[in-house]
Amino acid sequence: MAVINYLTTIRLDFGALADLAEDAAALGLRRPLVIADKGVTAAGLTERVIGRLAAGTPHALFDDTPANPTEEAVDAALAVYQAHECDGLIAVGGGSPMDLAKGVAILATHPGPLQQYAAVLGGAPKITAAVAPVIAIPTTAGTGSEVGRGAVITFRDGRKLGVLSPHLLPKRAICDPDLTLGLPPQITAATGMDAVTHCIECYISPVDNPVAGAIAIDGLARAIGHLPRAVADGQDREARREMMIAAMMGAMAFQKGLGAVHALSHPLGGLREFKLHHGTLNAVLLPHALRFNEGDAAARGKYHGLRRAMGLSPEDDVADFIARFNSRIGMPSRLSEMGLPSQVLPAIAKAALLDHTHATNARAATERDYLNILEAAY
Image (cartoon, rainbow, N blue to C red; front, side, top):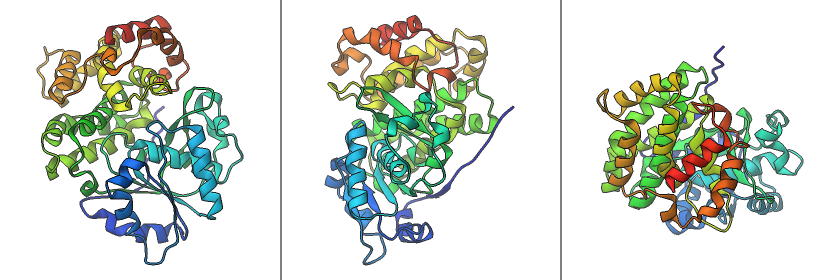
């Protein structure tokens, strides 16, 4: 039986940020905590967002979000939230500030520690509708966390786990492509490949949700058609808008679940001694996961849809196309190029089995299968 549930209130277009004050008022946010990171603040985007609050609105700011949000950062932001008696959150940036905001939203109204709410630990039913309201404002086009029901956090014990609940969906998403104009090519490419991976993994997932599948395949077509343009010209307004839509659609399809790429990129991103960008990891791993998943007959049947969406002929190899696409937009082709030592690969393969996305991969995978994918990508 398909279980279908959509979603939240989204404002999508150039200039949508102008309606922030209206959304804040609708949610009763009178003293919000703004969550960002140093890069977003340095780019002037945090100030632009704060400037759209109603005149005189008191607020607090936490912009120490790390590239891969951690339990320690959630606790630090929560302390700011509590010290300023905030009543909701406004997340500005990529997936990291949004995931951090969701972690704070839980602990602002639920007892700690946060790890008890991790999906693989059975924590989803513990998250109630009492979570603090979140307004999500993406400044990249990749994670789609503005319409996602989960957050991925690196905990003190080193595990990078997903915290999932429909209650974690931001109450409002403001998708204003103006905020992505001029994003550097490398970040545009890496975040864009995150969106591509979301669309592909969700589409070929065995979970039955035809609506999510249709959204995923349309998002893939938009991303493949417009990501090279956005990388080549950061001011291409049509490409920026289409990529913001593609990212949003990839996350709207999360109800079908992700797969092997994310089962591996999550623990890789949790390695604290390295700073590995999530979207870049997905780009490098995707061709190899596609080759593995094509070995499953049911998944292989869906590759026809992938080919159509990407403008390929029935004879074209999907994995090879993605590898060439990565090269075209400047993505690395190997994990070794990212500074990752080969010694960590067996532990990552083992950790992949414990990730919540493992269960919805298009093809059942073992620890040995995951290690083979990692070694092929290395």
